[in-house]
Amino acid sequence: MTSLFLNGVFGVGLFLLLLAGGVTLHLLNMERTYRRVAATSKVKVDYNVETKANGGNVPRDKLKEEVMKEMFIRQGSNFNAAAVTAWMLLFAAFAYFYFLTPEIFPRHNYFQLSDLASDTFGFAAFGLLILLFGLVTAALIPRKVYAYYEISKSMKIAIMFAVPLLAVSIFLSLQQGTIYPEVDLGSRTFAFLALFASEAALLWPVYADALGGMR
Image (cartoon, rainbow, N blue to C red; front, top):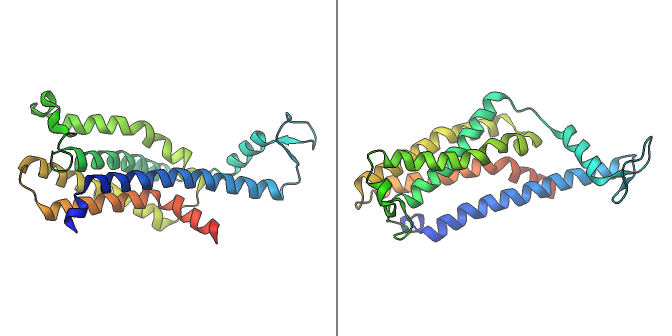
């Protein structure tokens, strides 16, 4: 089982597959909701013409914009801050787990960056670069994704709990970096499980809505 956790192709593939699935399902969820509203609307949707006043045809883009406004849900500033933090840490935990040491990808890892690896604060600089890279995506998710879902209290707790869980995953990966080439299989296994459990929690509102729409 541990060898499966340390299989780079499997892990990276699974991580990207879950992300790609989340993006695809989110787009499908939005399209499904739009079509339901359009089907029950008294206004005729016209895919070709501009908006006509007073009950005339309404172009698809215009109606979709109105539907998105109606769907928008304020999740709360505390939750949004936790979600942004969790997504940033997710990318950092992923990078630390798979690319910090040559253990998983011998030719593609932090130690290949000799100038950075030899620096006293190299580990921290590596993480900071990943956090800054992930910030652009993470900052958009609460407003562009979560704001269009009814997220239950338990889902919010799971997403917020991903923050300390990912912090533990990062810490364990950093610990592995300090003892390399030795390998602590127990900490590596827990770091893997923490990483993917957090990713599942962060994506669950999208997957849950998609599963609900299939019923």
